[in-house]
Image 1 (tube, rainbow, N blue to C red):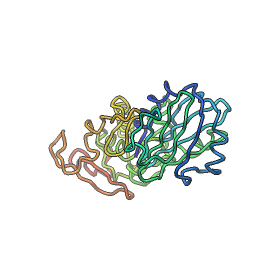
Image 2 (spheres, one colour):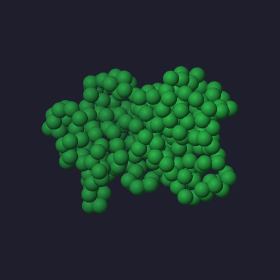
Image 3 (cartoon, rainbow, N blue to C red):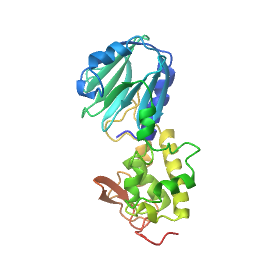
Image 4 (cartoon, rainbow, N blue to C red):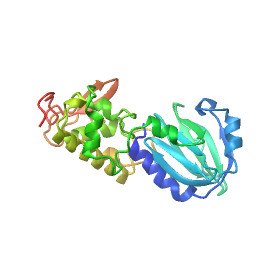
Length: 280
């Protein structure tokens, strides 16, 4: 699933191409992806609108429109966005297309989604996103004290809490595993058992791994691609994520995969020992 670094990369790639552009056509090939109203109504409301800004909130991509409305896209498990001229796109690229947005530049924005779980919605306000999403981990307001307050009353495993979008926006499986490894915290530790020092290390680790993921244009394991069609390279820099059975680069212990709230979770059992109540 595209997480914060992948969606941020898509935003950064699309912004110079789409800012100021106008939607000229909308073709929804998978009607269930439209969250509110009909595909026909979405097209009627969207055609002719200018894109004022391309933004991100958590794992959501947001096109802010001149009308004050916003087109909100969520790529879910296998979604990606490709920017092509009609003559450039290949049959293979169009194989899993669920929506096509035509632009006054002559280009098309293709929403590709092999599992057809991605969504699109035209909303009058972004307030709904803010109500259901936690703070952005790369904002200045995401301090150690802020994270400590978020974790204080939560007994669930810290890995599950990091992936909870109501608590912190944008972190998912891959970057949660990487941050916990960097902070040397076992993924099953109850969130409220972390000491102030551990929380400070974790907060710093979250920021470092997310920024590194953005610098490397995200991680391409299967479906994720940049709008150009190019792959990201962050998968080559992961320490534990998706490396089950390989040896830890720090201590040479085999990396283990366990389920945490039905999420595949990778960690080093030596570097991240299960010191549940010890703190540090």
